Length: 204
Picture 1 (cartoon, helix red, strand yellow):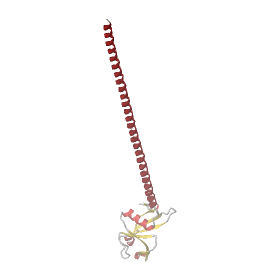
Picture 2 (cartoon, rainbow, N blue to C red; picture 1 turned 135 degrees about the vertical axis):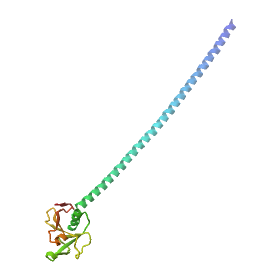
Picture 3 (cartoon, helix red, strand yellow; picture 1 turned 90 degrees about the vertical axis):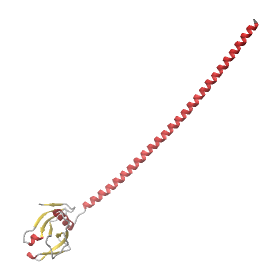
């Protein structure tokens, strides 16, 4: 009887020891698994932080690039505006320049005939039907012809007579044909107003 009791006690002790050993082992496994998961989570978190850091750095770089490009465009735009303003100023200065009588006479003939003509200030020589023209340093008369001025051959030429200068610097003018005048006629081809900025207004 004592042997049986001892046997049962021994078996129970062995079984209990086994259960305790297995339980401890499982606890250690669980603990190691927990440690492993914690390590993995830390690794993931640090990787996420790295990814976030690199993403934020890329975003910052993109923002910086956008700012730089915007500055470049602004500078280019300012330079373009500056150049445009300079060219507009030049245009205004050129259009605002007062033309002298010779330049106005050239524009008048271009407007009247669509041709570029040689313009020469002249004075009248001789009276009556034998009149002629000779070069003058200053005059209100301008002889205009496609070729060079030749006092021996004035045919096919025109004469512009400037008169009546107004306060705004404009002149009244009359265009006459040399050939028509030579034939005894009035010779008037056209008349109008010439403005110092180069605007020509014909009456006919």
